[in-house]
Image (cartoon, rainbow, N blue to C red; front, side, top):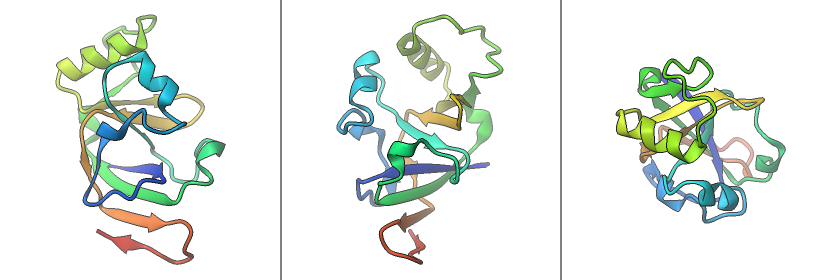
Length: 130
């Protein structure tokens, strides 16, 4: 199992739902690339893109790393294909998402994932466990 970290202004209860993908300014353009709903996450909570610095919530979950396709290793030789096609293909193969590096250790998940912990980043010391 690997811990994953998702930053959002949405107040999710119980699960982080990729069904909201494309609804905010961070994902609107990416939502046009593929019809596959997804959520982005980081593998290191201290290493994230600057535009997530103002997010209200940090969600922590975990997933079996073997259920995530490692795009850096790319054992299926998918490099060069349309990213939307890659999402559809690896989802059809039964992967829950993918991981890789875009300058940050990050990834995406195609399915709702159970929240283990939620931190309200606007309140110092809040480590609400859900």
